[in-house]
Image 1: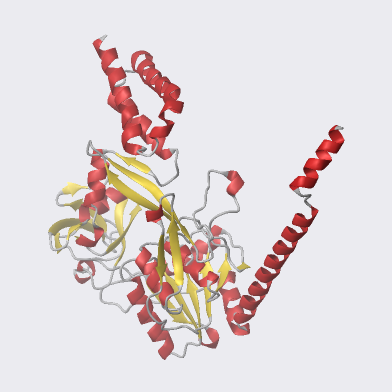
Image 2: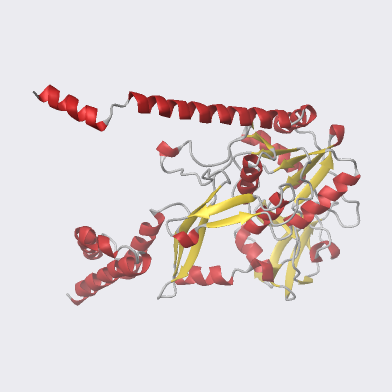
Length: 465
């Protein structure tokens, strides 16, 4: 009886938690939902007492809270105390690593390639080496992400790594002497660039990290020295990253004080504009941007801004549609709440966030290209594996990517730059103007056809007589 009473108290505590903590602006709706809240308490109590397996109140209440938050969207999240603590301490900028690109091969954590100028590269770690122990902890059966987390740590701290290497003569793996590494801040390559035909520069931006803009500037200067007259900016499979990075990259091509993106939520304080703050370094460089279903977040902000400001032609496929603002709030019990409070919009007011749950909104969200070129995902992956398959070997020259995969999206971009992207931009402007004029004409015609309220009232009275 006592346990039943405590269950009911816990359930009502959860109800109060919902109302008072998660939804502080919903007090006016409490009366209308009181019946549902009582049902919730009854369900928790009945499950606690009658479910085939023993349960406890905390587990049920936590599950209910998760369900409430996850019902909102795919990005809001209830964080249990352990998860919230991990989120607060996950300051990757203060963490270092060894400079290893790793994968699971035959059940072993295997080195795909050491990154140049990193502790692993300088120590002579070779592609194909297997990582067996991290600080004497066996990682053979450990998931890859957990093994990677063990190798990471604060910059300057030390870690012991035990590896094995294949003997080319016997084919057997032999354990190597232990490596004693000092962790460093690892700066992975985020920009790949090369010159195409007709002095067309090409830049593939991997993501928008803290040094993306700096690497972009270096690439642009190098291509300019090589005689670049136009540019293809490839944002396919770019998952995004820092908002500041997106604004800074857009600023390289857009004029002073132009709107890049804005956020808007239910509350006025969540409205914020982000504009370019300096004169563009390349304001007149003909530009084509490549996007696909893997382009998300910051890459959508950049492509949407360049498109809305008629600064670039977009080629490829519709982007992923992920651009919302989450705010993390601490809760009384050490838990946390990651809640979506606003969404991102392009300069012309297009919503970037895509609602995958509501099929009626299938045409909303994401960035649509000006010129659509469809490709199978498998074929697109082959294109980018040309970069990802680069293997760095200590003591040998830096390898060059072998660009052999067919890329009709890039081919189309080159074609547009040869003909002049301003043609497509002009056609797009004419089409938009025609649509606006048609909408205005339809509205005027509708207003003329609609009888006035007085005439309609008189007609109704006449018919009633």
